[in-house]
Image (tube, rainbow over the protein chains, first blue to last red):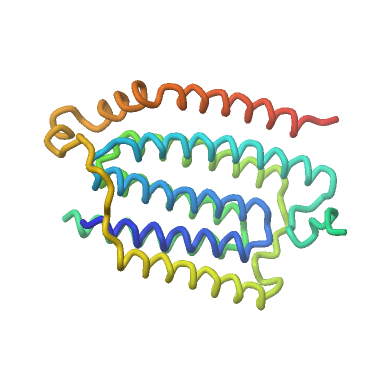
Length: 99
Length: 166
């Protein structure tokens, strides 16, 4: 398999995740779409790491996973405390910062 | 054989992620996402990244998805899916199509200029990818590794503080 196959796959998955972020109205599902985009980035990094005969890409994938885990924990805690105050996680109804 | 496995895995990834972003029930989309992550782990195994495939299953499919599932069960959100404003959905899909087309066009005219490393396939065969990965992580990337652990600690404390009742 050539490098381009993996890059095209990762571009398509990234696009699907981006569609999810743009069209979903549910905060949790938007978060999950962001995780999908991160998986696409990981595929890209690992593919380059194989075809350039190096291990640096895989090391960076580990750091990305670490950041994704931290992001999921903090983000879900934020969603939880927001739901406790406002009883909704629909993005269209989250507008208290709109002047 | 390798090509057949690649095409099967990538079509599973694409189809299940499409299902994931279009389900109305959040629990269904989490289960579709689980399938996506498992097939991504298969892709990683194809790319000689055994350790990455293992932590993909353990961290993503094991930990993060269970966290999402917990929050969905806890909140029981009344989702309207994505049918609220169809016009905005069309704009979003068009924007993403343009971006993906740009990426694919850039790929078409791409040539790799990177410096080749010293992990040749023969070395990979002799030592195994996990050992080479560990050597790289704990020699050249030791300080970022420690900083990542501090980041995880801070995120843990932050999540506890944010979710705590006043």
